[in-house]
Length: 209
Length: 78
Image (tube, rainbow over all chains, first blue to last red):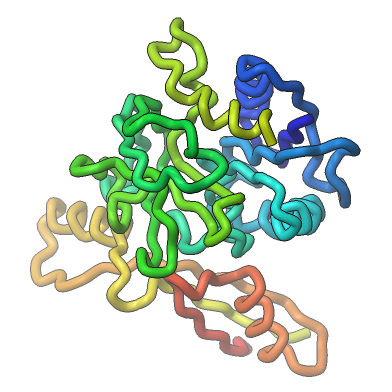
């Protein structure tokens, strides 16, 4: 069972559930005010959206909500946590991932397909991925800022760097590799009707956990 | 009741794309000699505790500012 955490202002939780199902798994929702993950949770998804209206800083208020203590315990025990877009921002603000997501260098909302390079195949998420992924981005605050020496940059935008991330980072993992955050939306790339199925592999990894 | 004003600003050396956008707009309006524009946030707290400044600083450490990219100051306002 995959737990998809809903915060006030989450948007992409239904897409995350569909992606888990497309990968052959089952998913259920957890609520931000819950103090425990649903019984039988094997892996956690923090979905995209604008939790708490992005007030203060994107992900800042959600990262201090009760469910995040349970997510932290799950991660500390080695469980997989995947943060997508706002979920990535929440994980950085919670200190579960290094760095922070800042306003895009263009100061604009960027919504389009990007070609990602998989730089690190030595995580439970990326073990079976190919060299590249074609996945859409859609965000306003997606520029990763941090010290590349202290971060596992797992996914990169390569030379393009459309948001102005340090080291062109698109996805960052913790040292153990069991927590991954990325700004692109793999849940929007799980069906050929959407133009790509390259996002499916990340959900297959969750289902396998 | 004490009013504490918290000012949160992007740290020196951290790119401030919103400040740059405002600077560009001011220049387009004809304002000359703008060397820099930086955008921050002002937070007003009405506090009751015995040490409102210390309390405001702890609030900054735990939520109001992200030390990776932001500096903050706290001040009591009459």
